[in-house]
Image 1: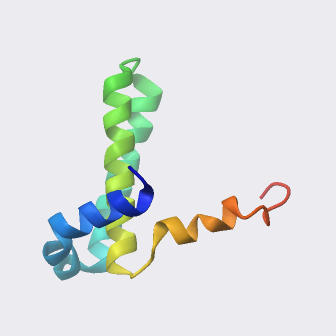
Image 2 (image 1 turned 90 degrees about the vertical axis):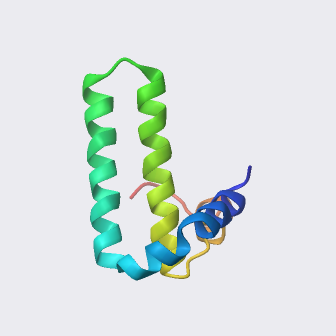
Amino acid sequence: MQIKDFQRLIEQRYATRDRQRGTPATFMWFIEEVGELATALAQSKDKKEISEEFADVFAWLCTLANINDIDLESACEKYTSGKVQGYK
């Protein structure tokens, strides 16, 4: 599955509720998931649990992108185009 396919899947399943919730509240859900990922990375040795937290973070990132009309695959061209040099 490509990034655009997953983003579209999230849009199809959750768009109405996500757009009603809006960016500020959705961002808070995203941050909560990032926190859960941080905890799993720091405290768990269970790869399945860690993997599930990565998936949750990515799904919420897609939601944020969707409600802000951002195509993540296109946004990632910043890194795939060869234009980024050095470190940030």
